[in-house]
Length: 295
Image (cartoon, rainbow, N blue to C red):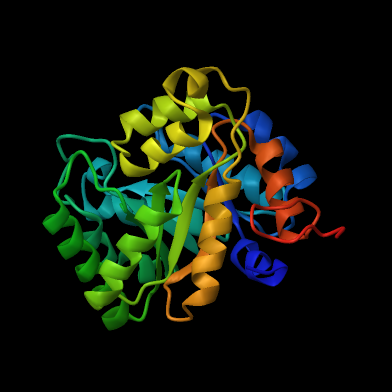
Protein backbone atom coordinates (compact mmCIF):
# COMPACT_ATOMS: atom_id res chain seq x y z
CA UNK A 1 0.00 0.00 0.00
CA UNK A 2 1.34 3.42 -1.00
CA UNK A 3 0.40 6.97 -0.17
CA UNK A 4 -1.26 7.29 -3.57
CA UNK A 5 -3.39 4.20 -2.90
CA UNK A 6 -4.77 5.80 0.24
CA UNK A 7 -5.17 9.22 -1.35
CA UNK A 8 -7.08 7.70 -4.26
CA UNK A 9 -9.56 6.09 -1.86
CA UNK A 10 -9.99 9.23 0.22
CA UNK A 11 -10.19 11.73 -2.63
CA UNK A 12 -13.71 13.06 -2.57
CA UNK A 13 -14.64 11.39 0.72
CA UNK A 14 -18.11 12.28 1.98
CA UNK A 15 -19.54 12.81 5.45
CA UNK A 16 -22.96 12.56 7.05
CA UNK A 17 -24.85 14.80 9.46
CA UNK A 18 -28.40 14.86 10.75
CA UNK A 19 -30.84 17.69 9.95
CA UNK A 20 -30.64 18.62 13.65
CA UNK A 21 -26.91 19.38 13.53
CA UNK A 22 -27.28 23.03 12.58
CA UNK A 23 -24.23 23.96 14.66
CA UNK A 24 -22.11 21.60 12.57
CA UNK A 25 -23.46 23.13 9.36
CA UNK A 26 -22.04 26.49 10.38
CA UNK A 27 -18.57 24.89 10.70
CA UNK A 28 -18.57 22.97 7.43
CA UNK A 29 -16.42 25.46 5.56
CA UNK A 30 -13.86 25.35 8.38
CA UNK A 31 -13.32 21.59 8.25
CA UNK A 32 -14.24 20.45 4.73
CA UNK A 33 -13.01 21.28 1.25
CA UNK A 34 -15.47 23.19 -0.96
CA UNK A 35 -17.77 20.84 -2.82
CA UNK A 36 -17.55 17.99 -0.32
CA UNK A 37 -20.67 15.81 -0.36
CA UNK A 38 -22.55 16.17 2.92
CA UNK A 39 -25.29 13.59 3.37
CA UNK A 40 -28.36 14.57 5.40
CA UNK A 41 -29.65 11.64 7.41
CA UNK A 42 -33.33 10.70 7.39
CA UNK A 43 -34.88 10.89 10.88
CA UNK A 44 -38.47 9.61 11.19
CA UNK A 45 -39.80 12.49 13.29
CA UNK A 46 -38.03 15.31 11.45
CA UNK A 47 -40.23 17.02 8.84
CA UNK A 48 -38.96 17.13 5.26
CA UNK A 49 -39.00 20.94 5.41
CA UNK A 50 -36.25 20.83 8.03
CA UNK A 51 -34.11 18.66 5.78
CA UNK A 52 -34.64 21.15 2.95
CA UNK A 53 -33.66 24.04 5.23
CA UNK A 54 -30.43 22.30 6.28
CA UNK A 55 -29.69 21.42 2.64
CA UNK A 56 -29.95 25.12 1.88
CA UNK A 57 -27.45 25.89 4.66
CA UNK A 58 -25.07 23.19 3.44
CA UNK A 59 -25.16 24.59 -0.08
CA UNK A 60 -24.61 28.12 1.23
CA UNK A 61 -21.51 26.85 3.06
CA UNK A 62 -20.06 25.76 -0.28
CA UNK A 63 -20.72 22.04 0.15
CA UNK A 64 -22.83 19.62 -1.87
CA UNK A 65 -25.93 18.48 0.03
CA UNK A 66 -27.04 14.90 -0.54
CA UNK A 67 -30.41 14.44 1.22
CA UNK A 68 -31.56 11.00 2.27
CA UNK A 69 -34.95 10.12 0.85
CA UNK A 70 -36.72 7.40 2.84
CA UNK A 71 -39.05 5.92 0.27
CA UNK A 72 -41.36 4.09 2.70
CA UNK A 73 -42.21 7.42 4.30
CA UNK A 74 -43.38 8.89 0.98
CA UNK A 75 -47.16 8.52 0.54
CA UNK A 76 -47.46 8.95 -3.24
CA UNK A 77 -45.78 10.07 -6.46
CA UNK A 78 -47.05 13.63 -6.22
CA UNK A 79 -45.40 13.97 -2.81
CA UNK A 80 -42.22 12.41 -4.18
CA UNK A 81 -42.16 14.89 -7.06
CA UNK A 82 -42.67 17.80 -4.65
CA UNK A 83 -39.88 16.61 -2.35
CA UNK A 84 -37.45 16.21 -5.23
CA UNK A 85 -38.44 19.62 -6.62
CA UNK A 86 -37.80 21.17 -3.19
CA UNK A 87 -34.16 20.11 -3.18
CA UNK A 88 -33.59 20.43 -6.92
CA UNK A 89 -34.50 24.12 -6.55
CA UNK A 90 -31.42 24.42 -4.30
CA UNK A 91 -29.18 22.93 -6.97
CA UNK A 92 -29.22 19.45 -5.47
CA UNK A 93 -28.50 16.86 -8.17
CA UNK A 94 -27.81 13.85 -5.96
CA UNK A 95 -29.82 11.98 -3.31
CA UNK A 96 -29.43 8.85 -1.23
CA UNK A 97 -32.37 6.48 -1.53
CA UNK A 98 -33.06 4.36 1.54
CA UNK A 99 -36.04 2.29 2.55
CA UNK A 100 -36.13 4.13 5.87
CA UNK A 101 -36.84 2.90 9.37
CA UNK A 102 -40.57 2.83 8.70
CA UNK A 103 -42.21 -0.54 9.40
CA UNK A 104 -45.46 0.22 7.58
CA UNK A 105 -45.06 2.01 4.23
CA UNK A 106 -46.96 5.29 3.97
CA UNK A 107 -48.08 4.55 0.42
CA UNK A 108 -47.10 2.84 -2.81
CA UNK A 109 -43.33 2.76 -2.31
CA UNK A 110 -41.98 -0.22 -0.42
CA UNK A 111 -38.43 -0.33 -1.78
CA UNK A 112 -35.90 2.05 -3.30
CA UNK A 113 -35.87 0.32 -6.70
CA UNK A 114 -39.42 1.59 -7.28
CA UNK A 115 -38.32 5.21 -6.90
CA UNK A 116 -35.22 4.61 -8.98
CA UNK A 117 -37.43 3.25 -11.77
CA UNK A 118 -40.23 5.82 -11.42
CA UNK A 119 -38.77 8.51 -13.67
CA UNK A 120 -39.30 11.09 -10.92
CA UNK A 121 -35.58 11.63 -10.38
CA UNK A 122 -35.02 12.52 -14.02
CA UNK A 123 -38.09 14.78 -14.05
CA UNK A 124 -36.49 16.80 -11.24
CA UNK A 125 -33.15 16.96 -13.04
CA UNK A 126 -31.53 14.53 -10.62
CA UNK A 127 -29.51 11.85 -12.34
CA UNK A 128 -27.23 10.80 -9.50
CA UNK A 129 -28.28 8.65 -6.58
CA UNK A 130 -26.85 6.49 -3.87
CA UNK A 131 -28.48 3.26 -2.72
CA UNK A 132 -27.78 1.35 0.47
CA UNK A 133 -25.38 -1.58 0.68
CA UNK A 134 -25.27 -4.12 3.50
CA UNK A 135 -21.97 -6.05 3.61
CA UNK A 136 -22.92 -7.61 6.95
CA UNK A 137 -26.60 -8.06 6.23
CA UNK A 138 -29.65 -6.33 7.59
CA UNK A 139 -31.82 -7.19 10.59
CA UNK A 140 -34.89 -6.47 8.43
CA UNK A 141 -34.11 -8.20 5.11
CA UNK A 142 -32.67 -11.62 4.33
CA UNK A 143 -29.49 -12.15 2.24
CA UNK A 144 -31.32 -13.42 -0.86
CA UNK A 145 -33.71 -10.46 -0.89
CA UNK A 146 -30.83 -8.03 -0.41
CA UNK A 147 -28.93 -9.56 -3.33
CA UNK A 148 -31.99 -9.47 -5.59
CA UNK A 149 -32.72 -5.85 -4.69
CA UNK A 150 -29.16 -4.76 -5.46
CA UNK A 151 -29.21 -6.59 -8.79
CA UNK A 152 -32.48 -4.82 -9.66
CA UNK A 153 -30.99 -1.41 -8.85
CA UNK A 154 -27.94 -2.17 -10.98
CA UNK A 155 -30.20 -3.11 -13.90
CA UNK A 156 -32.44 -0.05 -13.51
CA UNK A 157 -29.43 2.27 -13.35
CA UNK A 158 -28.10 0.90 -16.63
CA UNK A 159 -31.48 0.96 -18.37
CA UNK A 160 -32.29 4.52 -17.32
CA UNK A 161 -28.77 5.91 -17.69
CA UNK A 162 -28.59 6.96 -14.04
CA UNK A 163 -25.33 7.50 -12.16
CA UNK A 164 -25.94 5.20 -9.20
CA UNK A 165 -23.51 4.11 -6.50
CA UNK A 166 -23.76 1.87 -3.46
CA UNK A 167 -23.11 3.47 -0.07
CA UNK A 168 -22.63 0.81 2.57
CA UNK A 169 -23.62 0.67 6.21
CA UNK A 170 -20.67 1.47 8.43
CA UNK A 171 -18.30 -1.40 9.18
CA UNK A 172 -15.38 -1.88 11.56
CA UNK A 173 -13.27 -4.25 9.45
CA UNK A 174 -12.33 -4.62 5.80
CA UNK A 175 -12.73 -8.39 5.39
CA UNK A 176 -16.57 -8.51 5.48
CA UNK A 177 -16.73 -5.56 3.08
CA UNK A 178 -14.30 -7.10 0.60
CA UNK A 179 -15.94 -10.54 0.77
CA UNK A 180 -19.32 -8.93 0.06
CA UNK A 181 -17.85 -6.87 -2.79
CA UNK A 182 -16.50 -10.02 -4.42
CA UNK A 183 -19.90 -11.70 -4.10
CA UNK A 184 -21.88 -8.88 -5.69
CA UNK A 185 -19.29 -8.49 -8.44
CA UNK A 186 -19.47 -12.21 -9.20
CA UNK A 187 -23.26 -11.84 -9.38
CA UNK A 188 -22.87 -9.23 -12.12
CA UNK A 189 -23.30 -6.00 -10.14
CA UNK A 190 -21.25 -3.16 -11.64
CA UNK A 191 -22.22 -0.23 -9.40
CA UNK A 192 -19.33 1.59 -7.73
CA UNK A 193 -19.14 1.13 -3.97
CA UNK A 194 -18.48 3.82 -1.37
CA UNK A 195 -17.61 2.15 1.91
CA UNK A 196 -19.20 3.49 5.07
CA UNK A 197 -16.74 3.89 7.94
CA UNK A 198 -17.24 5.30 11.43
CA UNK A 199 -15.51 8.57 12.05
CA UNK A 200 -13.23 9.58 14.90
CA UNK A 201 -15.47 8.97 17.88
CA UNK A 202 -15.76 6.92 21.06
CA UNK A 203 -15.76 3.11 20.82
CA UNK A 204 -18.64 3.05 23.29
CA UNK A 205 -20.79 4.97 20.83
CA UNK A 206 -19.70 2.69 18.00
CA UNK A 207 -20.60 -0.37 20.04
CA UNK A 208 -24.07 1.04 20.67
CA UNK A 209 -24.74 1.83 17.00
CA UNK A 210 -23.11 -1.37 15.76
CA UNK A 211 -25.37 -3.54 17.89
CA UNK A 212 -28.48 -1.61 16.85
CA UNK A 213 -27.58 -1.93 13.15
CA UNK A 214 -27.03 -5.69 13.30
CA UNK A 215 -23.33 -5.43 12.44
CA UNK A 216 -21.65 -8.70 13.39
CA UNK A 217 -18.28 -9.88 12.03
CA UNK A 218 -16.56 -6.51 12.00
CA UNK A 219 -17.90 -5.68 15.47
CA UNK A 220 -16.05 -8.75 16.71
CA UNK A 221 -12.90 -7.40 15.07
CA UNK A 222 -13.35 -4.06 16.83
CA UNK A 223 -13.63 -5.87 20.16
CA UNK A 224 -10.43 -7.79 19.48
CA UNK A 225 -8.58 -4.63 18.42
CA UNK A 226 -9.51 -2.86 21.63
CA UNK A 227 -9.05 -5.83 23.98
CA UNK A 228 -12.64 -6.89 24.68
CA UNK A 229 -16.02 -5.36 25.40
CA UNK A 230 -15.00 -3.64 28.65
CA UNK A 231 -12.00 -1.89 27.11
CA UNK A 232 -14.05 -1.10 24.03
CA UNK A 233 -16.71 0.61 26.14
CA UNK A 234 -14.19 2.69 28.08
CA UNK A 235 -11.56 3.54 25.44
CA UNK A 236 -11.39 7.30 24.72
CA UNK A 237 -11.30 7.23 20.92
CA UNK A 238 -11.50 5.03 17.85
CA UNK A 239 -10.12 5.80 14.41
CA UNK A 240 -10.82 3.52 11.42
CA UNK A 241 -7.12 3.42 10.51
CA UNK A 242 -6.69 -0.35 10.21
CA UNK A 243 -9.88 -0.76 8.18
CA UNK A 244 -8.89 2.03 5.82
CA UNK A 245 -5.38 0.62 5.39
CA UNK A 246 -6.73 -2.85 4.62
CA UNK A 247 -9.23 -1.43 2.11
CA UNK A 248 -6.58 0.63 0.33
CA UNK A 249 -4.27 -2.40 0.08
CA UNK A 250 -7.03 -4.63 -1.30
CA UNK A 251 -8.20 -2.07 -3.86
CA UNK A 252 -4.63 -1.50 -5.04
CA UNK A 253 -4.14 -5.25 -5.47
CA UNK A 254 -7.38 -5.76 -7.43
CA UNK A 255 -8.03 -3.20 -10.18
CA UNK A 256 -11.48 -4.70 -10.84
CA UNK A 257 -12.62 -4.02 -7.26
CA UNK A 258 -15.83 -1.97 -7.15
CA UNK A 259 -14.74 0.03 -4.09
CA UNK A 260 -14.21 3.62 -5.24
CA UNK A 261 -14.42 5.79 -2.16
CA UNK A 262 -15.20 6.27 1.52
CA UNK A 263 -18.21 7.73 3.31
CA UNK A 264 -17.78 8.70 6.97
CA UNK A 265 -20.39 8.51 9.71
CA UNK A 266 -18.96 11.05 12.21
CA UNK A 267 -21.55 10.40 14.97
CA UNK A 268 -21.33 14.04 16.03
CA UNK A 269 -17.53 14.32 15.70
CA UNK A 270 -17.53 16.01 12.30
CA UNK A 271 -14.51 18.28 12.83
CA UNK A 272 -12.28 15.52 14.22
CA UNK A 273 -13.33 13.09 11.49
CA UNK A 274 -12.84 15.55 8.64
CA UNK A 275 -9.46 16.69 9.97
CA UNK A 276 -8.18 13.14 10.41
CA UNK A 277 -9.40 12.00 6.98
CA UNK A 278 -7.76 15.00 5.28
CA UNK A 279 -4.51 14.41 7.16
CA UNK A 280 -4.44 10.75 6.10
CA UNK A 281 -5.34 11.60 2.50
CA UNK A 282 -2.62 14.26 2.28
CA UNK A 283 0.07 12.16 3.98
CA UNK A 284 0.19 14.11 7.25
CA UNK A 285 -0.99 11.10 9.28
CA UNK A 286 0.13 7.50 8.98
CA UNK A 287 -1.84 4.31 8.56
CA UNK A 288 -0.77 0.80 9.62
CA UNK A 289 1.35 -0.69 6.85
CA UNK A 290 2.07 2.61 5.11
CA UNK A 291 5.58 4.04 5.34
CA UNK A 292 5.77 7.17 7.44
CA UNK A 293 5.60 10.39 5.46
CA UNK A 294 8.66 11.55 7.38
CA UNK A 295 10.69 8.35 6.96
